[in-house]
Length: 389
Ligand code: FAD
Ligand code: DHB
Image 1 (cartoon, rainbow, N blue to C red):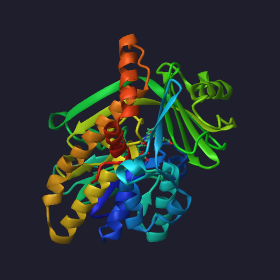
Image 2: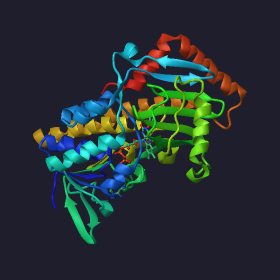
Image 3: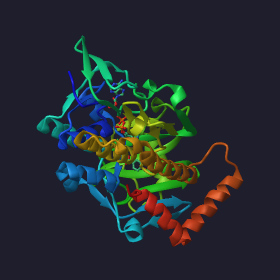
Image 4: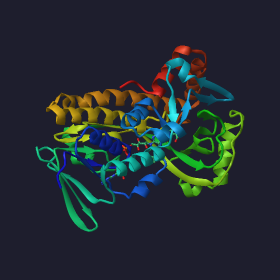
């Protein structure tokens, strides 16, 4: 088959890009390794910046999001019995929205069916070819049959473990990486959230985050050693830790209930510098990872796609190559600032195993300064709500 843009991966970046191209009359096909239900089963991000919600609005796929999403005017940084509220609405005039990645993905999948956006699920052995030539193509197997998509461009939206980044020779790129000595153990449960706003807590037992998906569904995370496995944690032990880390910080206290999902995610900062190689463009987690503190991963995927779709649309409409040439510089400028913020908030709010009493005092001094400085709160709020495109 032949198309204008072959998109590898049907996560948020691939789906958003596919819809934006389709809306502008650019032909595209998405190939995804997993089934649709597998993709929907992955519980990931929960906080959307306006960069992301604006794209959904531009696509006209925002009805359920606007009806069910929770507008958050502020969030909280908690430590040693003190809660510092960051009033993002007052400090920036903007807000964020709680609406799960699963729900956003479901809306984009449903709209793909309605609008005829072609997604090939369960595509095996996806491989990219001739990306340095003027005639790249993608191959895969579907139901045991070999398939080939010829295209003008390939968009690598296949996450951290996909084949797109690996199709770029090491000599053409540079990697920047930092791994953190802990992971996040998450639980999703149909119980009311312990507080109407998110709480990021730095406690003696380690970091904890109270988040939510709705007024009746909670999402919590705690910092755990990298050596821990989910099987090491009973639900009761996790609820005990959550109750200990949030009480008496949260007004209502933590309500316990059966886990809908429990998983551990490692924390990593990673940037792959080059986001373009010949006719291949990377977007989202295929090019960069942030630690989840600050909720930037999904939102960065959305900003990459906003830049890339504009550039591809200009190319197909007018043969204008300027946007494509400028994509990487534009995207990386925003990516590095989100990398900085996620790294900063991770360092401020976690207990690092190698830290001693001096580092703890530094964290305490920084949080004390933050509690009393509107200037510093504004910097945090501005980054949390998302930098402008
Ligand atoms: P992905 O969502 O990874 O999508 C890539 C898609 O490509 C997947 O559907 C994958 O199946 C597909 N793919 C992979 N290999 C192939 C192949 N060979 N062929 C075809 N398709 C392929 N961010 C936050 O802000 N907050 C969080 O709490 C948070 N939690 C996370 C937890 C985990 C375990 C992970 C991995 C990420 C988390 N993130 C979080 C980050 C956020 O979910 C990502 O930034 C976001 O999903 C990026 O979207 P993407 O479309 O670029 O990549
Ligand atoms: C969620 C995840 C995050 O990483 C974060 O910073 C805030 C919320 C969540 O899954 O709800």
